[in-house]
Image 1 (cartoon, one colour):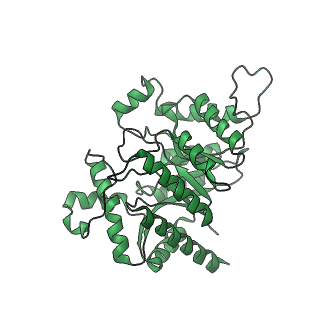
Image 2 (cartoon, one colour):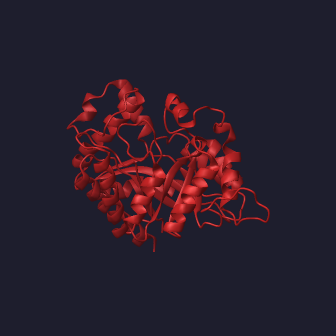
Image 3 (tube, one colour):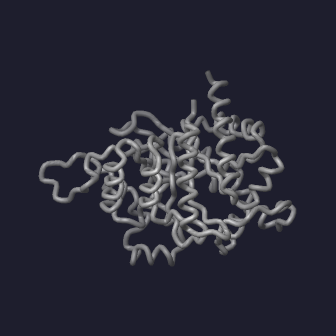
Length: 334
């Protein structure tokens, strides 16, 4: 009985603005809650014209405040961009406001280009090489305060927060296993190392105070519609966005284009074949068959899905179909 969750980037569509995107994100979160999705995660990206979730903790508060029971969190916070104490205070505050509902996924990538990374950090003295130490420091702030502890996270100490490691490589898989943390793999945009990372995570897992056995989440793009043809048309927005991003021209989420596949140059097709191999696009039966095989292949404990769809109503419909597929899979597993 694999839980399904939602990863949202608060996409800014052409012809709209960040306020519209953030209101649409809350609408989607409420929809996901009604449909029984387990978590609603937002991701930290910077200097991306088409993504409104840069101030991730603020958007999490927006979503958690507008929902009542769905878990809300970061998928993820790019920890090298921040002092661990600041993140402990931010997420300790979120836990104080919304107890028992907050997740914190941690990544080691900057979530942007190097020029923007320098603007975020002011210098690059703290970098990815310090990531294990930064994770350890952050986890320490969430423990109850020890006698004589000079620096405390207030709020934060003793907070009930699920901490995850995120990754798209073997490094994150190994570290998550060694630290005894749940692990989420970014197969929705970097699927190449998925199966090897799963193997590494499970092999290196050591029980911890947070987790007694491996717990794996995998990510996928799911764009569902009433017909395969309509889903393929909706997919073209995401395809255009990836091509623009990978060729150094990030922009707003564009409207779909009929027959976009036929317009692709060979190098553009190669980009999309690489990044979208863990994508399930189509009518309900098509998506059902694809996700059934994906979950069997990975043995995942959870699935998190994302849908970059231009039209908000079509996006809500896509998640409705995904929830129906989830229920069919659960019924078959009984």
